[in-house]
Amino acid sequence: MTATTGRLGEPQFDLFTLPDEHMELRGVLRDLCEKQIGPHAANVDEEARYTDEALAALTSSGFAAIHVPEEYGGQGGDSVAACIVVEEVARVCASSSLIPICNKLGTMGLLLRGSEELKKQVLPSIANGEAVASYALSEREAGSDAGSMRTRAWLKGDEWVLNGAKCWISNGGHSTWYTVMAVTEPDKGANGISAFVVHKDDPGFVVGAKERKMGIKGSPTTELYFENCRIPGDRIIGDPGTGFKTALATLDHTRPTIGAQAVGIAQGALDATIAYVKERKQFGKAIADFQAVQFMLADMAMKLEAARLMVYTAAARAERGEPNLGFISSASKCFASDVAMDVTTNAVQLFGGYGYTRDFPVERFMRDAKITQIYEGTNQIQRVVMSRALLQ
Ligand SMILES: Cc1cc2nc3c(=O)[nH]c(=O)nc-3n(C[C@H](O)[C@H](O)[C@H](O)COP(=O)(O)OP(=O)(O)OC[C@H]3O[C@@H](n4cnc5c(N)ncnc54)[C@H](O)[C@@H]3O)c2cc1C
Image 1 (cartoon, protein in one colour):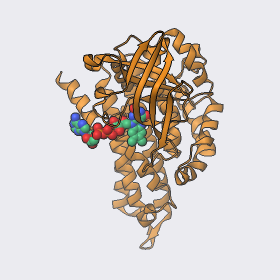
Image 2: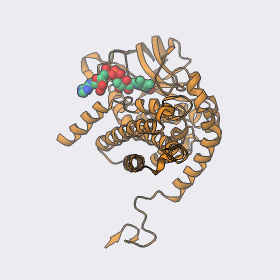
Image 3: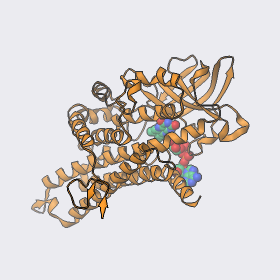
Image 4: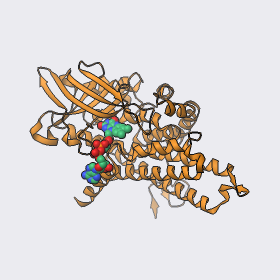
């Protein structure tokens, strides 16, 4: 019986082990995140301020947009590498992990379907850290049902003119480039939606006020308004009418990244909890000595390990260019985010009353975990995607 790399049991059997370069990447990131990002996480959350230190640290080290291919000035990091970046950053500060998350989300449609000229216009500035990107699909009345969006785009001469509003846009106001979905042919439903790239300085582009949120407070979430917003004709991604497909194909590639964020948040909470239960004494001994506590830790770690494997599997399948990514991509995001909510809630539980205060990081992890069950499609919508794939 042979495995891909050798006989079962021989040392080179490397299934379910990350390659050395991924392990090294994790090591470098662990160090960078603990020294340069983690120390600011509580303050970023408390003041709901932008993650300036994380942006500087990730940009100078080349980790803000590791996925950008080398031909556009990037590092060409694969999907698993992109997940490791997000996971390690989220382990110390979920808000900061929105920087690499949004850079991938905001450029994936362009990478998948954009023209060479448009890629050359946009991607180098993101690769070198001059710019960050956002993805604008959702609207006030079109969330889960994103296909019912109302933002319109008309071709006038050699320009597109956009009108309407997007909401809940992560990194709104901080991004230079926005991938925006808008209706070009209203009578064609989802096949009448097109994808565009909007620059922050385009005339008629306006950023709204910041939302006041439960978590990821260091990542601004805003509305975007398009008031006769004029953009050059060549800023369309792919052909007119393909925008909704591009938006969904983007999510197939980026939902594992949200899964990675969830895994990172859960790992941060688990690490803090393991340290705490060894220190905290009740009934004359460390609470880690109680079997009820030990079993909670075991369950947390067991679920986390399963989530991590599913996320890397989904990312690897996306990287291999497998078709029909919908099921595994949704499953990885859905499972990992449910695990993150569970693990962080139990982390607060194991800290007792102290866990309920801002003196310890676990309440922040719990608030931050919640969003992973909501964005890039709620977990109900992930289950809709999964069951459709099963029944088709
Ligand atoms: C902090 C934050 C950041 C975000 N960032 C971005 C971003 O960068 N870009 C972007 O485009 N969007 C972004 N979003 C939007 C996010 O993707 C949506 O909030 C999400 O898709 C849900 O849409 P909704 O809020 O309108 O909820 P609704 O669609 O109104 O859903 C409300 C409830 O109904 C349930 N529901 C709806 N339809 C069904 C159904 N068919 N079956 C079962 N249950 C259903 C939902 O699961 C949910 O529980 C962000 C949101 C937040 C809160």
